[in-house]
Amino acid sequence: MCTTCGCGHGQVRINGKRSHGHGAPRNGYRLAGQTHGPLDAVHAPDTPIERIVAIERDILSDNDARAARNRRLLAARGIFALNLVSSPGSGKTSLLVDTLRRWADRTPVAVVEGDQQTANDAERIRATGAPAVQINTGKGCHLDARMVAEALDSLEQARAMPDGGLLLIENVGNLVCPAAFDLGEAHKVAILSVTEGEDKPLKYPDMFRAADLLIISKIDLLPHVDFDMAAAIGMARQVRPGLPVIRLSIKSGDGCGEWLDWLAAGCGQGG
Image (cartoon, rainbow, N blue to C red; front, side, top):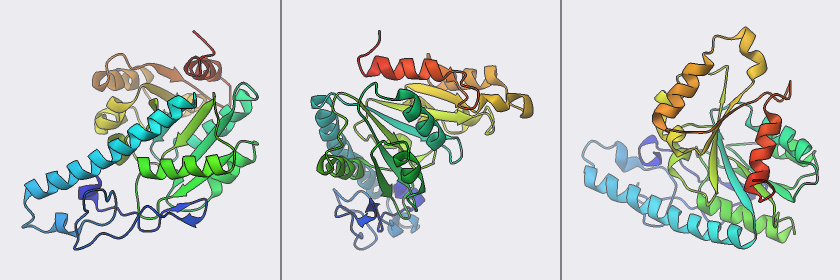
């Protein structure tokens, strides 16, 4: 978690503008309600473990309260929100672009893009015609509920809230911290590419335990990589029993129909 990894969000930007919700911590500690910033004291050998636990509790309780507000807002607007999580390079953005093209005019849709720097991914999303809000986390390794609330405000101001439709949140590429932070989404969707190795669910169990769907991506590369599909699914279900799995390739189209059906069901368009 961020209380021990030392990540900070002093340079958070929403669509290129400095976020008003994040300031620098004082005295090396995060205060109750301050969800980010370097925590120098955690690295000091004399910091009591009780203090560290209390800080973590403050961070997560504040985030959970904000996530609950996001969830109520999304539910009131009939928006099916997903939090897409994975390692860097798993194909999240490519999957999003392909999904938006295949989704076409089924329902309204919008995207929240999370990256440490650049607006490259948001620009790829906007090229499909879908509205996108870019969140740059600076030194931070995950999105949090406050950032998503600001992104929702930005969509509202742009009259781009996908009422009755789909909100796709692409988290920062990281299999650790995003597992702990609720954004107000309906589900976390974990993406594991066949180029990463089948043992990721056991190496990063918190993330796969938090997911409600696993997409195994880039399956068109299976003839060229050493990846044991059965083992990967078995390891994922070892940490999250019964976890649904979709095997997918945007190159061949395999699994894309199953993914769209899953989205449609979540939006109330399917069984």
